[in-house]
Image 1: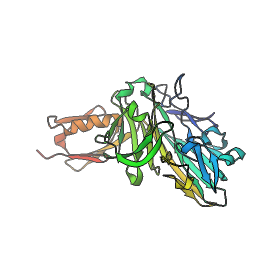
Image 2 (image 1 turned 120 degrees about the vertical axis):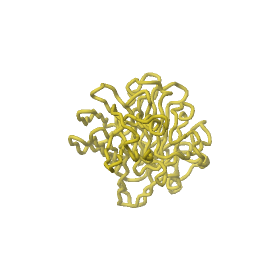
Image 3 (image 1 turned 60 degrees about the vertical axis):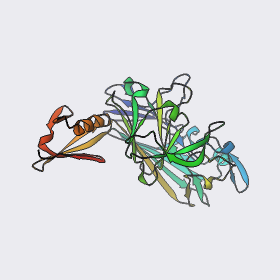
Image 4 (image 1 turned 180 degrees about the horizontal axis):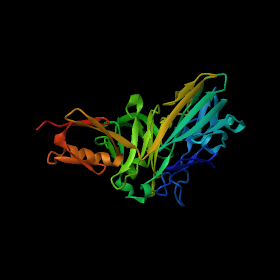
Length: 361
């Protein structure tokens, strides 16, 4: 195991699959990452490459030949080589071998770098095409988080908060024998004011949210039962899958940035035609990253009537309560991190994607 550590977090990564195994909160002695349990899904945070989701009949076609490849590809099942480690980062590499070429006939290098800075872990995928032809690929993260966090609250007490009030998802054609998409996008009506209640039935199939063109920049797993949270910053990942194990009351939730998705229902196809596929020219490289911030705090700016501003940091779980205090016209004051402020002393309060102004009365 490879370990990255600071005063707050201890991050553990396995060489098999270059898979994140643990993000341990040292002061309170709990793990954000699902550790597996008998009778439940056993993985922690597999890395998906060179496909995301399932192919029709687990097969794809290239130059008239059929190749077999199972769900999410083979990277998660291969041993990576640790090629570099510093106090705050570790890099792992996988290159093609006889087994991968039998499933995916391209020469490649996949480099995964984990960087720990303060309360954030950044995951960087770097893909190099070592073939002499254009190489199609998809990739994604599959981190599973304990719900509840630190044992605080119940599974049903948690929500996902997004930067956008209106989102769409991809309809599934069927769940038996496998979850293929229909190709139809539809409004995700369960999202209310940018919030989505954690729902086993909704997530059991693997909800895929369309975040293209900046529609989804971040997603936060929060509850009013705890100050702890997990925020995923999507960076350039266009889709977000939310999944928990179907048919059981599993105490975890996967919040997964995707570059790609399962096949559209129909005939066995070619990888370059898949939705969300990346096409990399011979000899070229691409980089993709996402970031997990543990106990992320939003910036809140108060501006008084003299034009002076002060900056405060509020937990994701505390933002809702703060907004309610601010919009409640029966309250003349509000509280941030234990300090009380009078609305009459301020002209406005601003936070991410939200501002409220106060008159001078």
